[in-house]
Image (tube, rainbow, N blue to C red; front, side, top):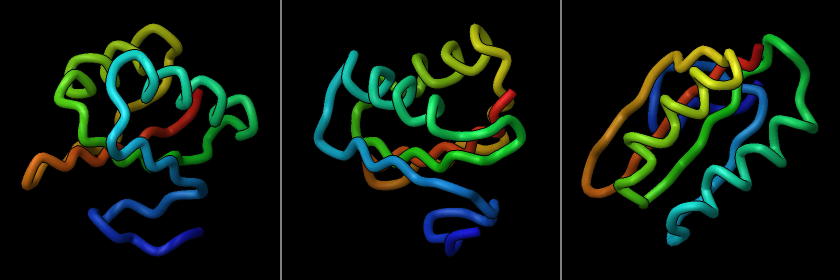
Length: 83
């Protein structure tokens, strides 16, 4: 597991999409989860406010569990357990 910067959840991999805007963060998430196993946790860091809408929909559509989302100073951090 990796350190818990930006939140209390432990995670297996992280994806920094800082500075990218829709649809790039979601496209990169699709690519990242392909390299991961079910049950693993992905930490996603974003600055795009659209991720507040897009990440939960991504999780719902693919059956992943959104464990936690944090927002502070225009930084959005998500912890997702893969289905």
